[in-house]
Length: 287
Image (cartoon, rainbow, N blue to C red; front, side):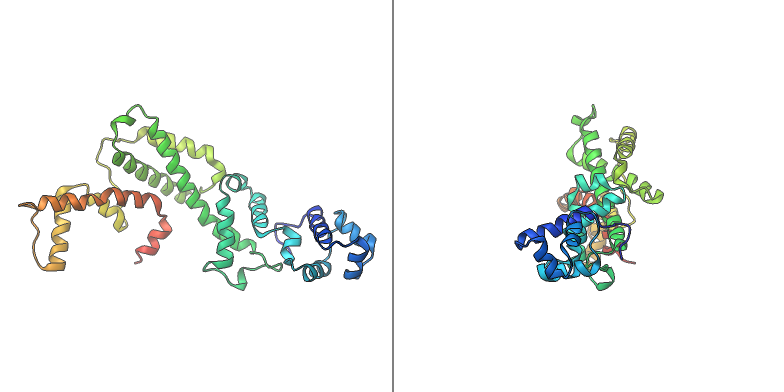
């Protein structure tokens, strides 16, 4: 009936006791309602034995609490306990939003269907494994971005760098690290010390004064690269002008203002590139 995560007899007993006290029932009275003797119900409450499924179903019926609650507590507690059992203590402690996101995805997300529900009405472990992997990648990316920013802030040349230069560096360094981790299958938030070490190494060897090139597999990176160069920006505007108005754009006679205005989009694109995940890019730019 259960998977990797097993009910804790003591905690199950505490929840039965909670129901008993909330209904103001004695052991004898609760036992009578369940059709079992006082010593038996007492053994369940004391955590000496795990109440069988039939008893839990009865308790659920008379209390209105879901069956899963008796075995594992609230759904967030269940998800958190499962992640801890899988060795994900740090992410549960430092990023409680991950647990909430799994809960929300189970109840209201696109994956809500009976196939994801286990026998006690909670998300099955396969569902939690799959969705957690996606969430962990997002959290790891956010953490690496923060680490990169912190390392850049402490550089001796930090004051010489514009905000745009710093944002560019964050995007490029983070992208490189994530690409490596993805290829190596090393997305693991528990290895935070290893991530800090890699970040320090990548920041130390990054050339902040060279012309930065972004990954241009998708339109966002390509636009960022184009808008860093006046001539390429003029070519882009010329292409758009021909496509939309059948007129040529030269960039002369005041056209420089349009070039400069279009190039103001670049910091926003860099910021957007920092925020979105590779999965989102895949969704945005399907082949």
